[in-house]
Length: 201
Image (cartoon, rainbow, N blue to C red):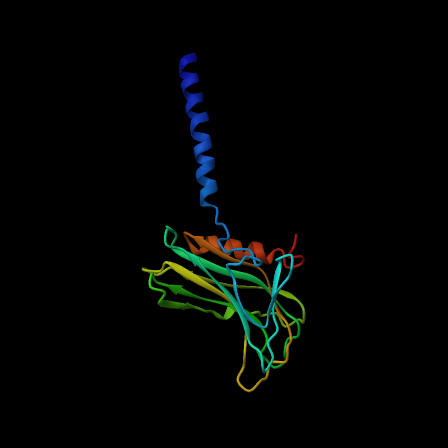
């Protein structure tokens, strides 16, 4: 009897760390580099805070700006990807004019650098109508066959006929998360939204 108890206890002790380890491996992690990493290509009217916490685009009628980076997904076994960021518009225009609003965007790229598909959805653009308020911009996409990279952009929206005047579009905590199923992505989106009162907590 004592020997049987020992065997059972040994099996539990041996298996428990493996179970915990497997669980930890499955937790989605942000695969984007930090904003102050040299992996980001900054074009035009872009500034990154010295602490690397935020990036700001301030386009005018004469200047353009965006920043992007490529992330490898060649070895992933996941089926979906979440693109996400906190976004903040310094001055939201009236009447639904999107000019100047921050938004995130992307491509799936094949091994030759050819675009397989575009990553764009309405909720990837800043949607708050309050000046200076943080919002969560996000999009969930199924990973297509042949995709080996994601190109993740941060940009400033435009509407035909409206000139940009230098108002800020700011981004914080951009993320790319690889997940097995859309509900996992929704959990991450909910977590981001739960910190809108203070995105730095």
